[in-house]
Image 1 (cartoon, rainbow, N blue to C red):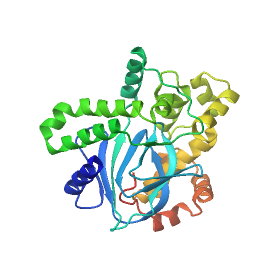
Image 2 (cartoon, rainbow, N blue to C red; image 1 turned 135 degrees about the vertical axis):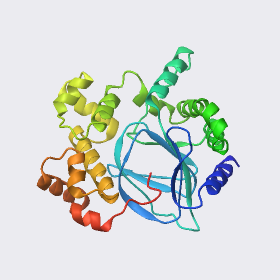
Image 3 (cartoon, rainbow, N blue to C red; image 1 turned 135 degrees about the horizontal axis):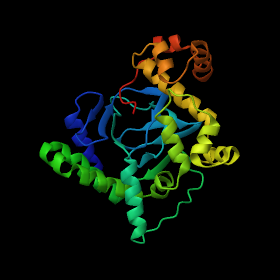
Image 4 (tube, rainbow, N blue to C red; image 1 turned 60 degrees about the vertical axis):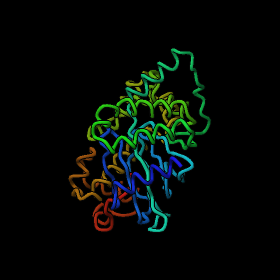
Length: 295
């Protein structure tokens, strides 16, 4: 019933497709009634919870299809493809996007360990993205958070506390061990990804990334691929091109998008863009618009 309540809240607040802010930092509601094929996107650290309909996310060839039975946890910035290919007016998409607060997640993980609540950090084959089943703690915390939007006073007074409660529910839930791998204070790979993702317009080398992580180049390459499925070079290129594709679809000129993600050579950008997406940047600009509901 709580998922239906969240859906009703979104329906009431959103008469049209798109995304809206809730007044709580990093928390947005979204809805879509039109199918959208998977397209390049960049997921920042987040949880995406669907209460109606379904979404698809592709990371390095691995498809993640999820609906109201599972939420998506992406604790590190990731270049993906995302879409809503099964959505229709008869099968609309409703959901909540929660940006994960790294400071808060790390703080909570340390507090949980300090009280003796230790969890295994062995995650098996999950890399970059994890689907986790809804549990009562996550559902109750999400409902309590979304309900705050009905009152600006409640949102201002209780928003931070409810957001903390939801982060705690994520760490306690099925995605908890996976999230702790990214937000643990000793995770040099996650710190390296955060550093690179915030500086895509700067030149970066694998040696620089390895040095920042305090590892040899070979060890860094192996651990990076274990965490993301991609080599460091492949990851940086995908992050840059996906960001550029989104910017172009959002109306930015091709040359501006290329410079914005660190390409000095327009011809190199065009070659790598076409190799990645099968279209030149200008063909992409003509054929794509940033779709509503693409989180």
